[in-house]
Amino acid sequence: MNFEEKTISGETIYDGKIINVRLEKVELPDGQFADRELVGHPGGVGVIAVNENNEVFMVSQYRIAAQSMMLEIPAGKLEYGEDPLECGKRELIEETGYKAKKFVHLGEYYATPGYCEEKLNIYLARDLEFVGQNLDDGEFLNVKKYSLDELYKKVMQNEIYDAKTAIAILKTKEIID
Image (cartoon, rainbow, N blue to C red; front, side, top):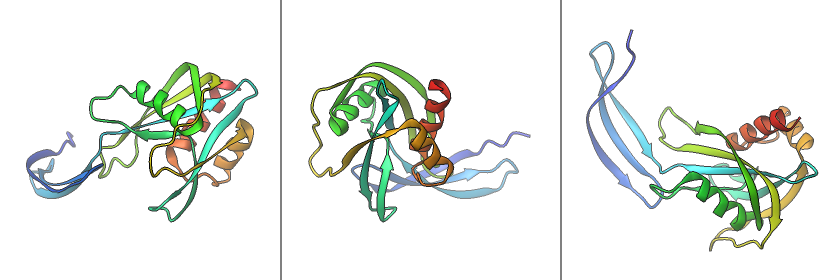
């Protein structure tokens, strides 16, 4: 059976700086109709930066949606049409102050595909060189090094709540070990 839903009509009900929200009427596989609320987002990039000692540069920052400090890999929002690797290079320097000579693409992942179009690209960065941190206005975060093994344990003990970060750590652990 084909489970594809066909969009019949749609309207933007919110158009913000980062996201937009659309209400779409869809035809279901059985011919019935339903409403879908969709969040439009240009996507994002996360970078797991690992030095020669298998230490990972992590950022911690307050996230209002989670109402807590979150331990994450450096990451940022894509501009529409922007190359994900270029965005990742920029975000790594801005947030950690490190530039990488080697990047490996670890994959693309949807953050919450049930209602959000945000797709995240994740990269592993190696051969790091410090060039100076350059945070965006209004960006407040701390940078700290952790061993890859310590981060792996944090993921397995459910101490890392950010999905892109957990994916990056698990994939990197598999590649490096």
